[in-house]
Amino acid sequence: MKITFLTYGTDGDTRPLLALAREVGARGHAAHVLADVAGAPLAHAFGIPFTLLSGDMRAAFQPGGAFGALLKDGASMTRLMRACAALARDNTRPWMEAARAAAQGSDALVYSGLAGFVGLAVADALGIPCIGAAMWPMTPTRAFAPPFLPVHRLPGWANLLAHRAFDRMAWSMFGPELNRARREVFGAPPRRRPWRDVPMLYGCSPTLLARPVDWPANVELTGAWALPVRPDWRPSPALSAFLEAGPAPVYIGFGSMAGIAQASLIDAVQAVAARRRVLFHPGWSGIDPARLPPDVFVLGDTPHDWLFPRTALVVHHGGAGTSHAVARAGVPSVVVPFAGDQFFWARRMAQQGIAVTCPAAGFDGTSLAQAVSAASAPALRDNARRVGQAMAAEDGVRTAVDRLLGGAARRLDD
Image 1 (cartoon, rainbow, N blue to C red):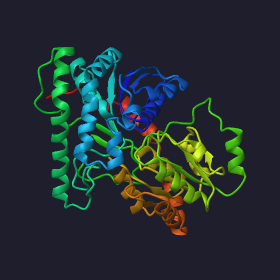
Image 2 (cartoon, helix red, strand yellow):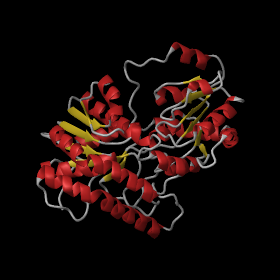
Image 3 (cartoon, helix red, strand yellow):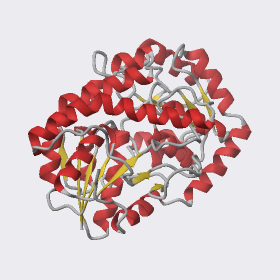
Image 4 (spheres, rainbow, N blue to C red):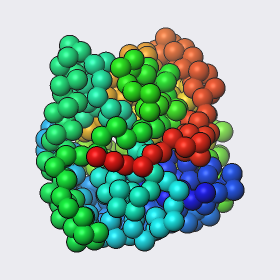
């Protein structure tokens, strides 16, 4: 069999699909991944065939980029959707052309992220069975509101209406450019509405998110899709020495989020470092390590599944991949959500008693130090160990690939 994986987004969108593609390859089948340039080194390290898609996600998160101002000022769902649609609109045709070339002869196409509608269009035009993949739940339900919606205490009927409104808004923003590209690439007539009843796999832990009873049978929570530590990676001698030199440290890192003012972020790191040993990952923040206290250990990219079990607590942005990695490690969190589904995962972790939320608005040394103190309580540490043990029994990658190779994907129709 041949499975083509198509996504566009941050590292948190690409890594899970690389994990699935690696498992497909390990079972003797062919896998091909199309994604942002940031995913190329990992794909090459694992020997996964990879096609670079047009666009630069990192640039989009920097000041002046499509998402930079939103993360700084706070993003409503509508503003975030418009920024996503603008980025996709600039790349819809080249993504479609690249996916058409890569997916020829595929037995299934798995789509995710900002390239989701493109994946559906390509699978439809080529007559390839397809399946959706996501790291946060988008299927309409009465159980909770769409993850991108900041309000979360709604009656069941209102949750369902909100999901349907979100779907209509997404199609209104993405649909026109998608139809234009479908006509130019495939000569296809315009669609008036998106595809319906497509099978979905969610790389979410059932420990953190109970499966809604009103979801259809072709929607499944498999558990998280974690990529193993790359075969050529080793911790530096300096990192190993730091970890062995004292108590487990606090990790602070926000990945691709660049929305906190550098002065506030430095103040926050300094405040925590005054009381605790600190590992700091600058990510895409642009922080100059020379501005940090000398006893703070500054990390490069380090595999979360290796690092987090060696920490006492993790301060992060609440992205789906990072949230699952922290929970799986059995350590508590301080979540500083910026936008999108990050608020959803912050609430889920708080409900499990394994995290404290520290709002990005007004973020400074005082607020983070207080949140770190609260998250260090024995009850949160005990809860985190319990959740980590439960998640250790999950194998989301195996479950998802079982479904893919077992025929979960289906051909599209109107």
